[in-house]
Amino acid sequence: MSMPALRRAGPASLGLSRLRANGAGITIAALLSLFILTPLVNVAIWAFTEIWRYPAVIPQKFGFRFWGDVLSRGDVHLAMTTSLSLAAIVTALSALICLPASYAFARMDFPGRNLFFMSFLTVYAFPKFGLYITIATIFLGLGLIGNFWGVVLIQLVSTLMFMVWIPVSAFQNVDRRQEEAARDAGASPLRVFWSITLPQVLPAISAAVLLTFVNTFYETEVAWLIGAPEVRTVPLLMVRFINSELVVQYGAVLSLLLWVPSFVLLMLVRRFLGAQALGRALGA
Amino acid sequence: MSRAEATRQDTKGRRPIGLLLVAVPVFLVLSLIVWPVALSVFDTLTVETPSGVTLSLDAYRFFFSDSFSLRNLWMTVQVAAICTALLLAISLPIALYLRFSTSRLTGYIQALALFPLFVPSILLAYALIRTLGPNGTVDILLSAVGLPKLASPYLTIWGPIIGLVWDNLPLTLLIVLAGLGNVSRASIDAARDVGANRVQLLRYIILPRIRSTLLVAASFVILGLFSAFTLPYLLGPAVPEMMGPFMRRTIIDVDDPLQARTQAVVTFLICAAFAYFYVRSIARTRREQSS
Image 1 (spheres, each protein chain N blue to C red):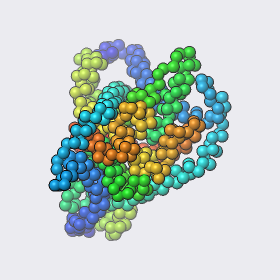
Image 2: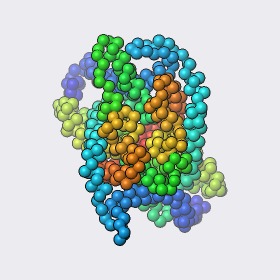
Image 3: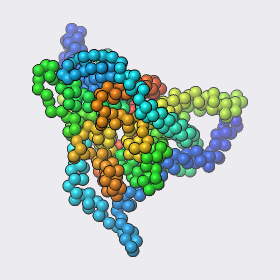
């Protein structure tokens, strides 16, 4: 209904138009729910199923039997340890080298500043997997294939976009007048940084750290290309479950185990960043 | 002069420190992005002869005359085209609804559409196999209502397409949504007042304003598709395969780094124009953010 017609018709037809507008909304919501949620709900059901024979719609027997099995598997423990230490090391190294750099980009003036800053755009300029292939050919010669530190090195590159870009804009948004006021009141530079600057950039830095950690933990492609078969991370264990494990529930339980913490961490990131900023951080 | 001003001038003087602080990440970019790409381009374009290094297109001649390589490339192009079309067709109506509706459903729809951001793609691959694979949920539901089984998309070209659309929906939607921010509600209302219907609104008011946004969204999707590995490998057919799994097999199983690099450079070249649009748009948002 066009606007003039709507005005003429008055409040009575407003209800009708709202219903129609919501018809579109309900259709979108229903289709999207079906598309997005079906696979996830399905896995969640499988994780709590003991017997589910085709073609029953509802599993014959629910239970937690496979949780114990998965939690006591040696390969699961090993993969968890590998993935957690990989993610922790990459995140720590990335923070160590990127946070000072992002401070420098945001606040200091030095020759080549813009050029160096824009050089990080090359991270986005190539299809990632092709880039990893070109790195892998170099690593082949250096004996870094199948090496834990080879994986660390490449994953470090893919964390740059979180650990440099997000904090840079946070440092730039800090209110300089507050810092200057504190300096004039006699605070030392370190004190100013600790009490004025840091609290303002902390949400963004936390978001960057969490994003880096979660992304490294679930990163599959570098681990597969550079790390396999010696470096066994959780995603690679999942690949093995998909390719060669007959017990469906192992994969389902592992999925749920993995997915819940990532969901919680990323919800935290969203609280710090908001949807659009999160999207930008991920390349949108 | 206050102490703050003094420090600021001081900071300007400490030039080398800034350079020192950015040195390591910049070195990483140079040694793990610029150098490998440059080296691959150089090595695939040259051969070593006893008289020295000479220019040679042999590696590319092989790629473009090998029917197997070409089939894989063609499949990647097809999947990329279909996924781009599907993603734009799905995200545009959702984005329009989110931008212009005042219904309470928008919150739910946005949360749902962004949800795939929180699901790692390896877990998605597993979930889709259980849902679309043999005796999966779709089969169960079809047989429950007495319908015959559909051909499963698992291990066909449609497996990766469904997975990649699922996976890329949130970021595509966010790009389109950001673009729709440039379309004011007032311009929509004005067009409605002179009697424009929905199709005309879309065609004459909305689409012209978001044309460049759609191009950026398509570029983002295409770049992602040419580097997709996990979903095509786990959900797609073995022959032909998409460039991601193909490159991995060439370097690891076939043990032919030269062809793997050639394949990588070919994907770079095909994506070059899209990479240009995409990077330009990122550079623009960064600049807007920082100013």
